[in-house]
Image 1 (cartoon, rainbow, N blue to C red):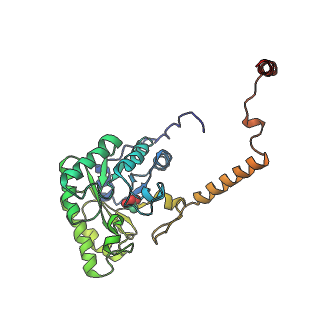
Image 2 (cartoon, rainbow, N blue to C red):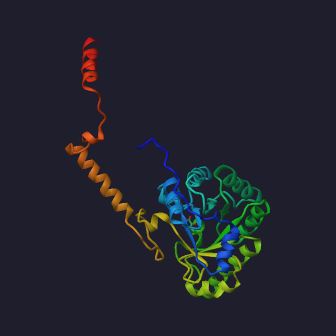
Image 3 (cartoon, rainbow, N blue to C red):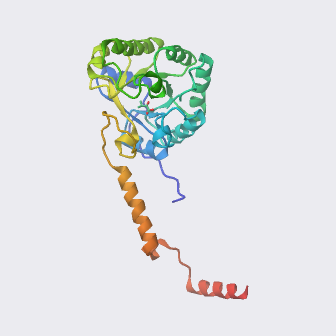
Length: 295
Ligand code: KIV
């Protein structure tokens, strides 16, 4: 690995994205682009691509930390991923994802955790999941001066307890609950809400009531923007791929092929070649041999 620091990609003339920018994009009916990232190289890619919002999602528990679900990831693990991502970003709004168990117990717990994401990882905002008791937690965090993004529909942190990993709102009663949660989070002051795995007609029905930007992931075309998990879209995650994922590359197989080629070269002597090695003047090499012989 090179010991030279990687320079941040220039962001051209792009202004730093704020919550106000997102509201303007919604008003102008310009789609908001959000992507997850979990580290410095992912952040550099998002920065260079000119996305509007980067979420350090707790999906990183599965995509980069290898857990089987998002549930086990800790605040400290999320803070490390989020701080690394921060170091690669200049322009997009950075949203930290409050992990399971870090905000549900009380308003005090929620505010304290959200403050850590701002102070220790440089987040512009935080995200939490669900309606219900999360609405009060969102209100408390916003009251403490930290912007909050809500998340309704399929909420992976509590999916096991609420019907598993399936879309939410195929029946009108469940759809109404999803809509009520979104509207409650909006009333609580959330600056945006993620809609995950919601039938397109449900989204379309509630969008006219949503005054804050709605970012969809498997929620159809009528939202104000879209989000995908970075490792899904670049083809670096081998686990279950939901219906809404669109793969834009196969980075995983490129990585596997590259490592296999390297292993082959090492085993056959094709690596390293002279061009990969450091030399020294012949007379110095002779002198070294003499010195070693004297030992
Ligand atoms: O954790 C995550 O990546 C998310 C997005 C899917 C919105 O919550």
